[in-house]
Image 1: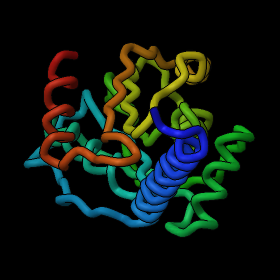
Image 2: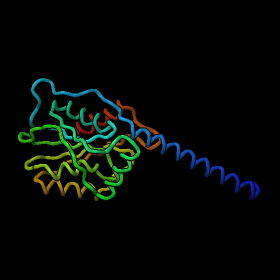
Image 3: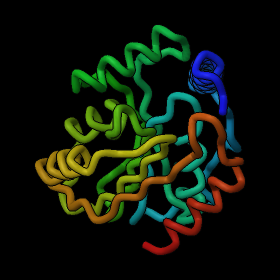
Image 4: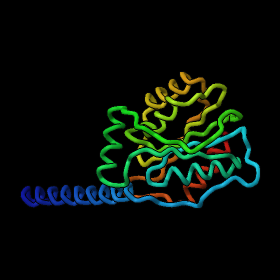
Length: 209
């Protein structure tokens, strides 16, 4: 039997080790979230399919590669949303703060003719268990009448269904019809899927729709 004093020290050391490992994993993830990871540039081959389109927001490039792969699958036009969330600790804090406060940022969207689109894919990272605030801002300023809307989220943790339901209501308020919600897990805070594994998930899950 381990003496009480030694047992107490052992428990304390285990707790400290777990805290150090947790802090290290969090630090690594924080640094990754401030690093843009590029992906192959996408452009439709020849005349794009006009019945489908992809609109996305991506701060660090992970949702961007997903959006580009979906557009590639359909040979569809694609448009990027930009917002003032710098790849820095201050930008990260602002993103979290706005998500918590449900504060919508000013955004810019690349030109995209939505008139012929019948199926619109909205691709976003997951911030505070909900779509990133730039996607909410996009929905609020867009006429989605007659469009089936597929929400595609990427993330390391999870989402709250109540937040997805609230987002769907905003889509409906602007004339759209939310049809599907896909959550693509990139990994966990201590490990990440490879790009090829993530793209395999995209092709498999989107192919089921």
